[in-house]
Length: 208
Image (cartoon, rainbow, N blue to C red; front, side, top):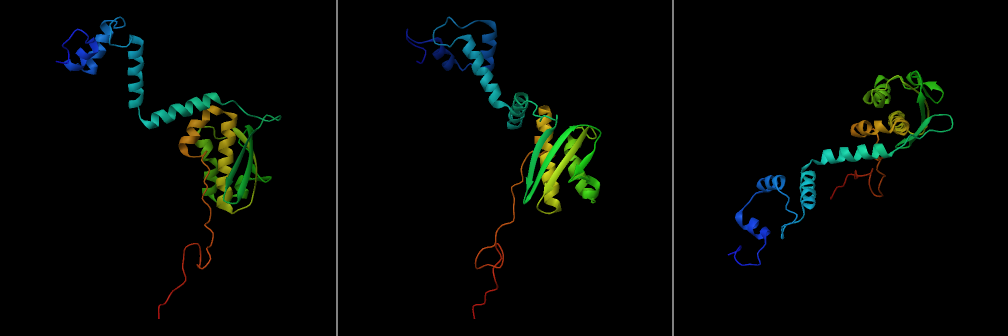
């Protein structure tokens, strides 16, 4: 009954016959349907199939493609001295980092970084952006940091180094972004509330 009558199109026939998408793809590869009434042109059918295949791709793959496009759109940003700059913040710490190709010299507030941060964990955290991008020992880093404690300063410098690497070489952005080195950690100490011992802790309460 669906295909009966003179005014029925070829599209109605396909809908009633139960032809699958795979069978339709085979027909498309064998014949051009552009001149048949009731079906869109072949170019539109190809566009529809491309959109369906794109929709099936995972969100991680789409995000990776977006990061690659952003990296290609970025250009190297350097100052008049040929250095790339990056700013990093964590809690109350603010770090300003300048990098340029060199022999791996790392100074913080005019001191060697191993003298400024004697703990091995802190030094390893500072060098992780270079190890993730496989550029360890290829840069000279000059950094100034102020405010906050030791851990906050380490994280601030790490963020500043990652941003400086991205500004010097935009192709390093996907690796740094995937490792989380370009994400600003916005967590801070929660303020004390009136009527409470601390931010959430209450005083001991006795009914009687």
